[in-house]
Length: 124
Image 1 (cartoon, helix red, strand yellow):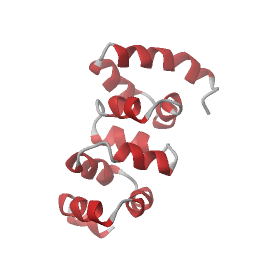
Image 2: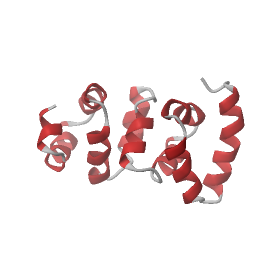
Image 3: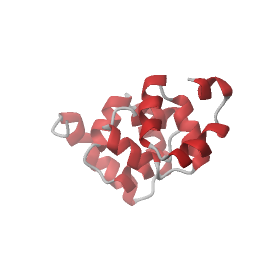
């Protein structure tokens, strides 16, 4: 994935935005790019850098991009957010992706997340 022309064009700019802590630019990256392209651009970045980028997006943006990463990487990313932030992200995910990710979490984390989610999302 990381050899695509878009990756080569956008990742240097994304790295500069991270270095300069350009929160507006990072938010725009999350909002404006098609989610699979955003994930492609970040696919070889560290978990910390991906979390810094996603932290500037809305919960919807975060969820839309997160599902395009491999499940183990999704789990690593998700665990860097607070329980409240993670509940918001998980609520925005498609039900199948949500279930796959929740199955990877410790029971105690799931028990902390569920009360923060709406009843409709909990039942899914």
